[in-house]
Length: 82
Image (cartoon, rainbow, N blue to C red; front, top):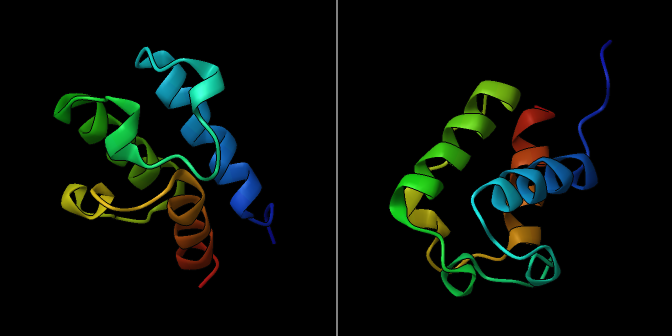
């Protein structure tokens, strides 16, 4: 079996993508909400596309509205492990 996907590995991917989108690294914590990170819809779409491409997990963009970075990472890790 290939590498086990954990919330921590997904969180690291999300952090890298958000930093590339211009979000300050210090602002990206597991408790940070996407709404508070000031990313635009294109950045959100690119993040979701990267998650889909990397983990084969689709998350609709509107579901980012009230979710934290850590919650998204855990959700993706759980879905990818099925």
